[in-house]
Length: 361
Figure 1 (cartoon, rainbow, N blue to C red):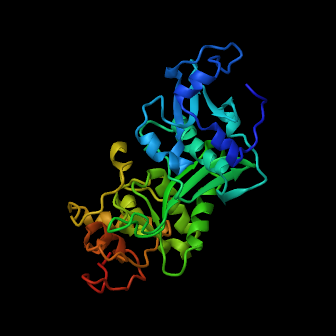
Figure 2: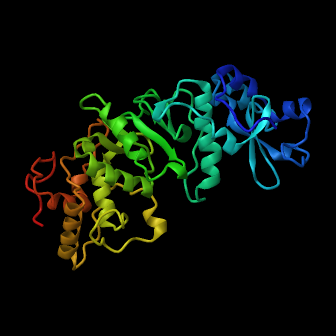
Figure 3: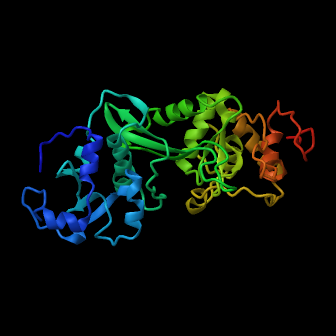
């Protein structure tokens, strides 16, 4: 194994590091990188980053390849479950690769293949090793998706990827630029980096454009979004949620209001919320439907609690509309949305099919 430091690989060095399991076993010693080497077998090796994510010309070749013939950046997992990445002709521990330094700071758009490789190492190896099994795994974002690296203390500590508007072609397109994936390492969390990213992306939008959030939106991300609309209320109307097909499904403020009514954002505000749903349910993305909620005898008290909760957390809903031409539904027909509107004092914008005056609290 090489020295304890590693520099950002150049485009040429990334290309030279692309190989497959069969070629590596034929051309290299099978000794492992540990102090007491153990023999490396095909079962210990896997493709951590598919080659087509860095070099699109490998896509057709990898489609027809067997497991041992698929080209990409290899990862070796030893008997202790420690992972090593094949880079620059040697095995490097995962943490060494993620200790590459740069004078950059904050969220920076990736330009070089070495930076793109760090994005993929974060999602395919670091995230998979750290996050709970219940979390949704990240796919390898294609080279056409813009990506950003978070440089925290001059080390790669997070990533995000975007989907551009109308990238699919035909009728199946993203309705707006969309934040598709985001991951921040534990060492850099709770320091405002997620808020900074949302502000950077939303404030750069042309007037009238929106930033979509891909489906599903995790519960932890919902708490970040609630904080965002509190800190940057002038940008709250730029954020929208999308469904599985990339169509606009509603505003972020409306989604948060409905989650608060269900008690799913417990701890995000000062007042005591309604009793939370079971964890298995609240972690799922909220289904957006025309069907009203079941109305009980305590409906008025339910509305009053929700109204106070929304006011005290400064969740001010300004407007609900559907910019995408395919969207037929109106959330104001959902009982949840009606309750949200009822407690917003300055809401006075009529909807296409809704009363001009909100419900009385």
